Image 1 (cartoon, helix red, strand yellow):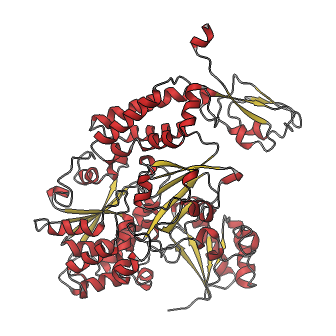
Image 2 (cartoon, helix red, strand yellow):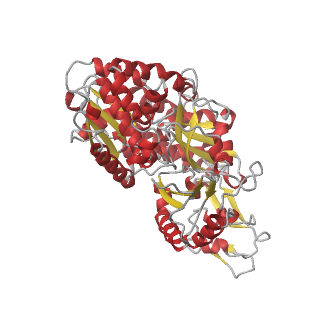
Length: 609
């Protein structure tokens, strides 16, 4: 095999593809041929590199140089300077903070150097559509090990000793689930991968499937061997076309290599996997709803017990884990339970992947050891709050999670600590909010999402969450009254304790945590009829501060209704009758010339007194 002097790793995760990384790859290949470097330099298309907001991304190895936000016009200069002259092109590199070297290599960048990659170990270093590259990085060695040298009970024992817990949200011990399924009566059993990732702002499972699909397949193979299954399914939402494409390719390649099908690796073990594209219902992330969908029925949860490990797909014992959980398994089998359990905390072992989004400088996909603090993720990896704003809260666990305030920034990230704070681990969504976020409006946003995604099967979720939204609408519109907060709490706790499935049971978390940590904002909306964050439209209005306005017309260019007028270089005016309070002018102004005023709505009682 030909050895190349340099490898150019082009990120082809969904984010970078949307930013035309395939065009970057084509231009790189074209320019390399033009310069006669095709025998020295190889272009490799990889999965998500993680630093999503910096795409398109190209990493030069073994130099470790990280190029970002490239356009095709940059490529000839990059090839000439770096590949021919050996000089890194600083203007195309990530701009470091003061703590980083002036010409940082990839692992000098704070976003990367504070992570620990287990599940994402292959991200950005191999072509996910080439099984040979996965095999070259120890791929399928764990499968060979368990088939040649381990009994099913030994496999389960290793998973139990590792302390691996389900990464889909509930955190149930994976080895225990496998053991229950193996011990369940019946000769027909199934293995299912839950890739129905529906949380707003979450893209963990999608990125793993795009970057390293064979790791998921290998984990499922090992799980199938442990529980005695011959058939498996990967349930992936159809909104993930790139993940689906690479998954189909991986399945085809694994079958061609004898890693799927009959008598795998010459043993008596046979196993096949089918892919099922889901229709995008959030509730199908709940395991019994997902199984109903797989069976061709409406995706609605059912009461448990019996649990899927006892009575699952088509009434047969079924082991269902999410993408990240399955991808952890090959590492555990290859490196040992003791190695895995040495990472993390006493009760939460290993690492966790998070999609870090919101009002933060470095958005992207991160993998960190359990027990790391929120502060380390947000400020060391995430680079702090965007535009120099102050941190206000972070929502973990998606719409089913809770808002954690600044005073809990040093909270360790593990299952128990997050639950104690009123939130959950969830599948790994992490949304950061700054000082301009209204916590009442935020709770309303997540509740509206839950209402739209509720399957409607049980009354507490179907009706109760709608009543929660109505109360939040009332408060955000300036019509809140004394007693509304008590009604919110009572209703939220009732829904939490009486709903059928996890969606309804966790739906009130955003309301309960914002009430717990940001009650003063609720009181301001109700008692003072004002929104301190200037978000709730019924309680704010905007105006131009004449003495600050330079007439630059940036606000004019973004106003969708023509509410702001005025000649260039002269103070502008804002027509409040045309203003829709979209905040575009407020956010784009560089001279503090747009003021947001809290309107104190006067009640009818006050008007008549």
